[in-house]
Length: 571
Image (cartoon, rainbow, N blue to C red; front, side, top):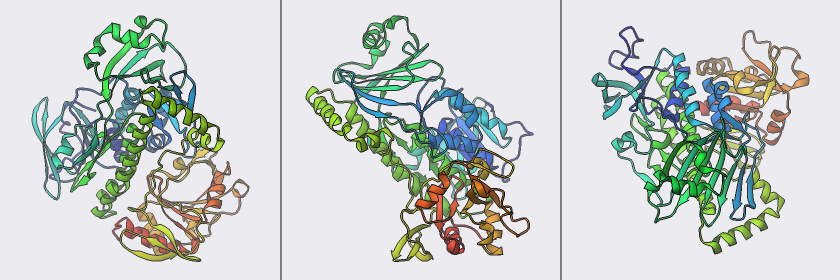
C-alpha cells in the first residue's frame, strides 16, 4: 500500500496506454474486498481512496456466513475470525424487557456461523493488508477522483493527489465510493428510495460495561434503543432521537448520560470511543452498470441497519462481480457477461432493503397502543413453534437466488422432461422429475475428506475457480474429450463426491491424468443435499452459486448451454 504513485520499477500496466485492468474508487469493504478477489485472479488493480487512512471507528457490526465465505475465498478468513463473535443471538424486547422475538440460527450450511458480530475497522484493516500480497494491486490514499470519462474501450480518471494532478486509465471502473458516490452521480443513474427523518444516536464504548455477548433491540415506545456486545470488549448503544431533539445533543454530556442511565450504573465513567448521529437510508441505484463503469456497496444501495446487511450486501456485490471481470479480462468471456452483475445483484439488494425497512417498523413505534398491539401479536405468534422457529432460524431472510443471468435453470416443461432457460431462449437439455431446482442458489459448504487430507472445507478443496461436482460418478467420464478441454480452459476443478465408506475405492477413472478429486462426505450433508435434488451433476461458479445442474447423461448439453449463458469465447 502507498500514499503516492508507484515507483518507476513497479509492474507495468496491462497495455501501453492503461495503468490498470480495473480502477476501484473507495477503500471501504466493497472496494477492498473486490481488490482482494481480483488480486487472487491476477488482475491489475488500483484502489483510490480520498481519505489519508482507513476509517478507524466502528461502523458495521454484523457479518454473515456469506461474507465469511467470501473472505475465505480471499484467503483472509483466519485473520478476520479473531475480530468476530460467532452465533450472535439477537433478541427483540418490548418496553417491559420481555423477549418478543429471538433470532439465533445455528446453521453452518455455508461453512460458517450465520450471524456474527465483528469490529469493522479491524476487519477492513485485514482487507487492506491483504493487498500487500499482490505486486499488481496498489492502494493509494489521498487520491480524490475529480473527473470520469468512459471512452468506450477504456475509462479515464482525473485524480488529485499529494503530488499534483494525475490521469489514470483502465479497462473498467468500479465505484465503491459510498452513499454520496461521485461515480454514481457521474453516470447519472437514479438513487431511488427514501431517507426517513428518523435519526439515531450511536454511542460506542470500550471496556464493555455490561459484558453480555449478544444484542438486544429495545422496541420500547418510550424510546427505541439497541444494546449490542461486540468483540474486543466494545459495547454499542443506539437511541432513537425525537423530532424536537437536534443533532447537537450528541455533544451534550448530560443528554448522553441521561440516555444511558437506564442501561449502565455509571454512564459518566464510560470509556467512550465515539458518539454520532445517523439517519437510516433506504435507496438503490437505478442500474449497477453503465458501459465500463460499475457501482458496488453503498454506492449502489443503502439500507437500514436492522438486519446488519449493508456490509454483507457490499461483499455480495464484490463476490459476484470479481469472477466476471476476471473472466472477461482474461479473454475467456465476452463483455456481455458483465451485464449479469446488475441482473443478478440488483433484485436481491432491493429485497434486503425491504426486509430491513420492515424490521425497523416493528422496532420503532412510539405510540403505546400500536406497540401494545405488536406485543400481543408477537405473543400469539410465539405460541406456534413453527412460527417461532421461522424467525429464530432467520428463514425470513431473502437468500440470493438467480433466475436470470449467468445460469442455466432446469424448468420442467412436461412429465419427465425439462429445459434450460437462458435469457431469451430455451433449449431442451435435462430430464429429471425435479423437486426443487438448485440452479441460482448458493451451494452448501460442508467439510470433506480426501485420500491425503482430512476435515477440509469444500471451497478450500475446489479453489477460487469453476467446479463440476458429481455424486458417486467421476465427472471426467461423462464429458467428451473436447468438453474436457473446454472445462480445463475454464479452470474447472472436477470432484467426485462419495460416502466416506467409498473414499479408498479404486481410482475414480481409468483416464490418465484426468485430475478428478475424490471427496468423501464426512458429515452426510452432501448426500442429503443430492437426495433432495435429483441433479447429480452440479456446475459451480467461482462465487459458489450453482450455474447449472442435471442428470449425468445431460451434462454435455448443460455445459453447452452454460457456455452460452456466460458468453464464453471458444478457443
